Amino acid sequence: MHKGKNRFVAGFLIGPLGLYLIFMIWPYVQTFGYSFTNWRGQSSQMEFVGLDNYAELFSDSVFLRALWNNLLLLVALPLVTILLALFFAFMVNVGGRGGEAGIRGVRGSGLYKVIFFLPHVLSVVILAILWRAVYRGDVAGLINGSLIKLGISDPEQPVEWLNSPNLVLWCVAFVLLWWGVGFYLVLFSAAMQSIPREIYEAALLDGARRTQTFFKVTLPLLWDTVQTSWVYLAIMAMDCFALISVMTPGNSFGGGPDHSSEVMATYLMRNFLVFGKSGYACAMGVVILLLTLILSVVTLRASRRERIEY
Image 1: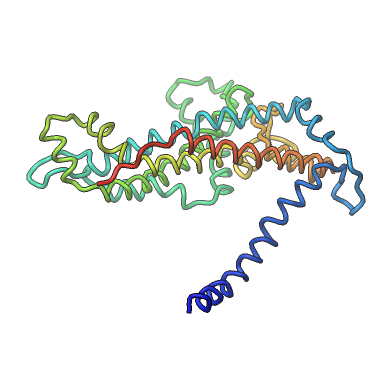
Image 2: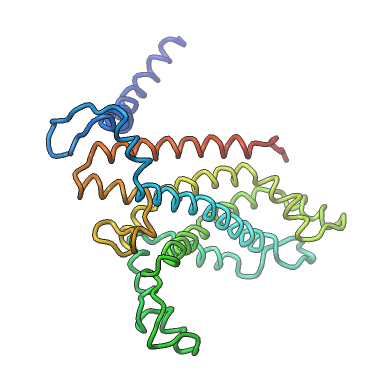
């Protein structure tokens, strides 16, 4: 009977598994193979070049600049996003004043969740177009226009937000932060709502302050959710192709000015579709894949701790 059941389950799984192998795993295998060739993407003709593409990568100043920009986003984006999302989620769920009803969130918490989550409903391309208008380098830009009205900025010399090598990457990082905080606020809120209110009330009765309650009660009980969120945000920091390619200046796929906002994904696409260096681009894809896997494993290992049951 068990054998029949296993064959029945295998019959349903073999189709989806086969499709996954064909459309997901096989392209990765092909990319790995192409990375050892000088394939130009226009024909099936190619020559085996061994590790030449990988050696060229780490002597390519543009690729190293893109890698550095990815690492900066990797450090700043997950940390700030999670801290803000945790703070807002804590205030929304348990930051209200206590009373006869015990611990409760701030008034209008449901509305705050909707407002914070709204940016995540929009596609990344729409966000890029909207924020490109906000960051316009003339008086018609929302930020420059506001600064000029307040007398902070000179109308003859408005700030070139997206054309400044020192500002453009942080402008992109702010948009990613603004876009992501709402989603993780809702995620952390859902996790907090599963924590019994009696735990918070007992902590307050024992004399714990709100800050102590957050670090001693909320954060340990949400650690699994925080850990998973960190991995997803790290993956987003390693990509962010759509936002940068639409939002930042540059001839093809953004990354300007002077590669100041270049990331590995935009440089990969430029080599693949514009320069015709498809084998070289495949080597970049392999490097991005390996870095993402290593970062995910290291993050999960480094943040692993004993699970707390309640």
